[in-house]
Image 1 (cartoon, rainbow, N blue to C red):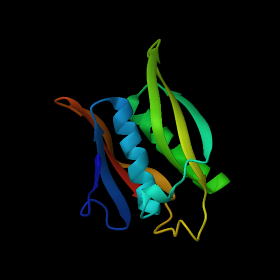
Image 2: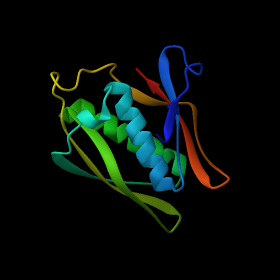
Image 3: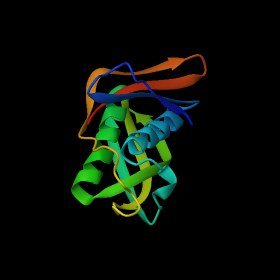
Image 4: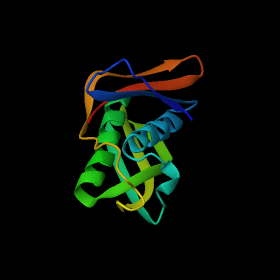
Length: 143
């Protein structure tokens, strides 16, 4: 599991760190950590539908922020729980472009009993960094 929850960071929120050997792996791990806050069993999210997510930002941390916010938006607006098996991040003219394939399904309360409802990603303690050979992110979610 390339993420861990941080119990002593935020009293009324949920915090986690996610990591991977590449930026893309770290983004995928952060997406799983986000979804796993809402549902106990990630395997219960069946990849029956596919959504393409395309975003851009000049900063990697803000790109991750926007990406996680997009997953929350899709949960709220379209009632989708999503996992992200593949992401590609490219850079052109000092702008980072994210193209992701998200797979999942509509929330089914019988199969997806929601543990908590994530409202938003916060900027409190939000950070992305490179440490040795891995990319890391710290995220605090408003629940």
